[in-house]
Structures are given as C-alpha cells and as structure tokens.
Length: 526
Image 1 (cartoon, rainbow, N blue to C red):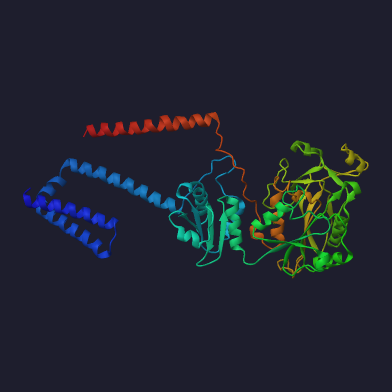
Image 2: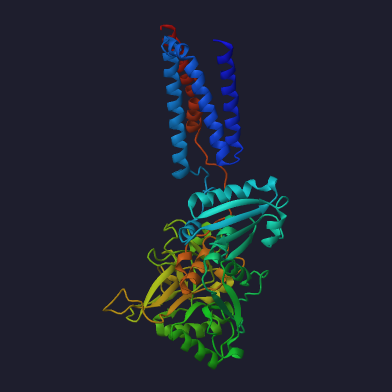
C-alpha cells in the first residue's frame, strides 16, 4: 500500500466524519448530500486502487466467520429496533400496585374515549419538579392517542407562561383544537385533570339549582357536617354552575335550570311553591328529591312530607318509618346507618358499581324506604337497596332511647328501596323513540348521605354525581371516579419472591455464562 492510497484512505475517513457531523448538525439539503457524495466517491476511489487487497481480505476464512458474526449482530439489532418501533405504536403496561394506583379510573378512561379531537396538555413547573406529573400524564397519553402533553419550564419559558395566564407552579393548561377552548388545572392529580377534561368537553353551561328557605341542607355550608358545601364543590369541579333558588321570592323555576336539587326540607313549602314545583316536574322536570326524617316528629319532616306527596303521582310512595339494620355493626356504625347496595346493573346511574353481597356501595344514615308498583306512564328503577336483615322500625320510643329490636308482629323486614329513579316511559308502539320532554326524577329516602361528613364515604360521592349527570343528560360522564387512596406495590407471597430471586440472580446469569462457554468451545474447534 503506497502513499497515495494511504492519503486517499485518510481523506475518506475524514470525509465520513464530516458527513456524520453534517447529518447531526443539519444545515441544509445541499450540504447533507454533498458530504455523503464526496465520502462515497473517496471510498470508491480507495477501493478501486486496493481491489486486489480487498479481494484477498474478503476470501479469507476468518473474514467469512467475522462476516457471519456481524450479520447475526446486525440481525439481532434489527429485530430489537423493530420491536422497539412496534412497542411505541402497540405498547402494553401492567399495573402491579395492590389498589391500581398506577391505573386510571373508569371515569378517566371513559372521558378519554370521548375526546373528539386532539387535546394538548401543557404542564408548567420548574424542571426539577416535573417527575410526578410527567408519570401521570404519560399514563393519560398511553390511554389515548388524542392527548398530547408537553413540559414547560417556567424559569426558561416565562413568555409562554405569562401568555397562558399561569400564576402558580404545578399548573396544567388543557386546550382542544387549534385556538380552541382553554382550561387551567392547578395541581397534577388524576381527579383534577379529569375534571378539567370534562369542563373542556362541555358544549353548554349546565346550571344546577339548590332550593333554599325551608331548612334544606345548605350548599354554602362547607365546614358544617350536615351542610351540602362539599356536594356543591364536587359539582363545580365537574363543570356545573351551581346556584341557590328561593321559590317564594322567585315564584318560578328558572328556564336555565338543568337540574333542581331539593335537599331534605324541614319546614313546609307555601302552597304556591308546591304548585310551581308540581307543574314543573310534570312537564318534564329534572330533579333530585331527598327527604329527611325527624325523630322528634316520629316521621318525615314537614317539608319532606310535602315532597312525598309530590312524587306520589309518579307511582312512588315515601314511607315514614326509620330503617334499622343489625349488619351495619360490621362496618362499625350503629344500626340506624344503613348499608346500601347497588339496586340495578341496568340503570346508567348504578351500572358501574360492583355487585356484592358483602361489600356495601353506600351509607344512608337515618333513612326511610320507598315503595313502587307497576306503572304504565313511568319507568321506576331501584338505585339502592338494603340487606334482607333490615327492617322498618315502628317504635319511635325505642329509636329515641337507642335500644331497638325487631318485632315481627309490628315491623316490616325485607330488602327495601333506599333510592329510586323515575323516567317517562317510551311509547308502547315504539320503544326506541325518545319521549318529548321526558320526566327524570331521582328520589332518595335520606338527604344526610350527601352531607359533608358522609359524601366521601364508600360510593356516596359517585352516586350523587352520577345522579346529577343522568338528570342533566350528561350520561357520558357517568362512571366511578378516581380515588386518591393509593397503596404500595403488589404484595407477593414468599414462594413467588423466591422464584423471582432464583430466576433473576441465578438462572439468567448461568444461562448467559453457559451460552458464552458453548460459543467459545465451538470457535476453538474451528
């Protein structure tokens, strides 16, 4: 090999280095093609001057073996690359946490499936604090290809941060479409992000009215145990507009009312108020009606008795006895706190609740029960029922003293309805036809289950929010919502742990060493 070929070889290598640099630091197409063109020409010229040497090298036995090894290596690398590309397009994940802490809730998955177009999530925070939110957003992006996320460092990108109106770190701004609706979310939790997506998807304002003026559980009372402040807050998180309604001063139910909530009235309604309520309900009203018992009055409160009369024309009878269930002691509550179970797997409100004879879905304290029969005009469905051990107590004296016992001669014992849904029946000749201005009512034998101190217990929150979503025709948002209770990793048995230890610490290394020994022995025989 003479000086000319050495210089040409060095020039070809330098040209190759330059071509790689031009590829990585892309300047323009001309530079890219010129770099690789010159490199190819130099290597071709070098090969032409050294064709005899190259031919001798390629015909050697060691070269053929080396080529075979190189081919195997490139095939393995090609297969791994192909698998990596496939995994990005068709990836699969398994959550090994005991409570599914790394899995999204049913409601979140349902909302993600409803995304009509691409949603962009901009996460604003400092660079060193992005890890927790990024793991959650990856989970969202894995579950829906229509959700894309991007991290924005508030220190390095202050212009974008200001333009998006971000004032605090750990803020996620959700946008839909080009120059579309924008919803900021403060705090990177699944519940907050999903609620933000729900607000993003709402096409129109949904207004929920709470009646006031009759001793109802007040939606403005957030700190009082018996208030409805938490209930109101949960509705606002879901994108509803919540307002109060005094029927006496208004004299009518506003036209923008999507849902009316009557939460356990104590004092009586005026006749004109009842007339307004009755007429509105019969003409296609959407209402969540909750009654309360009064121990001092040995039955329903005055206002609740009037609500009971309002629902009677729809085929539902609200009874006046308090329910008692001895099995409630298993949940460390007194027998007057009823364990509620899903009453229907077909109804939209309760279909996602698990059906189990051992685990309660709801808690209903100081509740009465509801009865209904066949009705040709309205479809009535039980939403929540008791255990067979529950009974309707007729002795209010024993209830007041706290010493209750079942008397088979006076008390009624069976599975009883704690809540029912009422809706207008479709015409008999066309069951698929949707009735015009259909009535939708949800009647509960208790209002305390939605109060601040019980709303977060078992499935009470999902029950009330699903009910409001059904009443407002937002059925796509009916589901079981995210729980913030997250356990650690899945617990394995000792035998499973020993098997994992044996496989990872001993078996895999031994197989690798054995394969190496076999390859070395076979090559030594060549």
